[in-house]
Length: 168
Image (cartoon, rainbow, N blue to C red; front, side, top):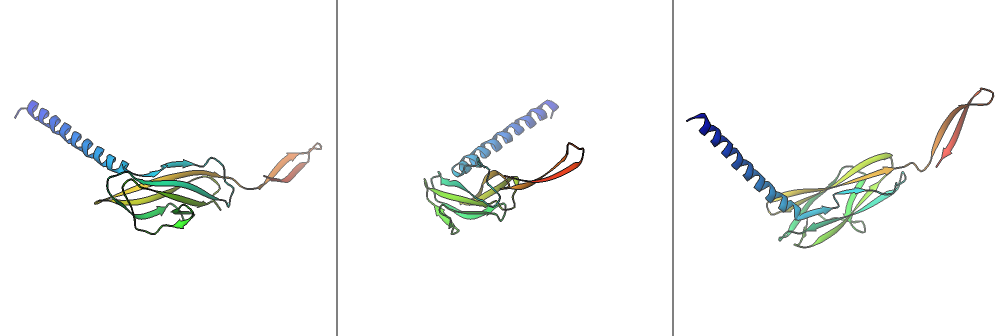
């Protein structure tokens, strides 16, 4: 076999394999796109104070043509709980019929989470024989309710001054 025939065969096989992978990837994306946890990203607009509980409303929707089964939920840390709206605990596993949506509520305790942080909420859904992991990320910036500032300066007589000041 000549090099040209081998090269042509290799390129053709590569293109067929690439097309097949792309086709199956598109099918899997369509299936995943029919079951959604929305929004996928939430940025808390207000800055909660240390110790507040932040509540984020999410929606788990089934836009497929069959019943799906929610088999597991998980959060990235112990400070976050995922319930139905009204803080009713989820009884796993449960099913969501075709075309239905379930409102969810993520409650995040901010105690000890100062500064910028992100938490994740995950839901595992069984759709036929496949398991789909859905995730929503929640970004927030937690402020101190109050603090103490240490101000160091020189007085008019060139003496060092230390001042403690409560800041809000």
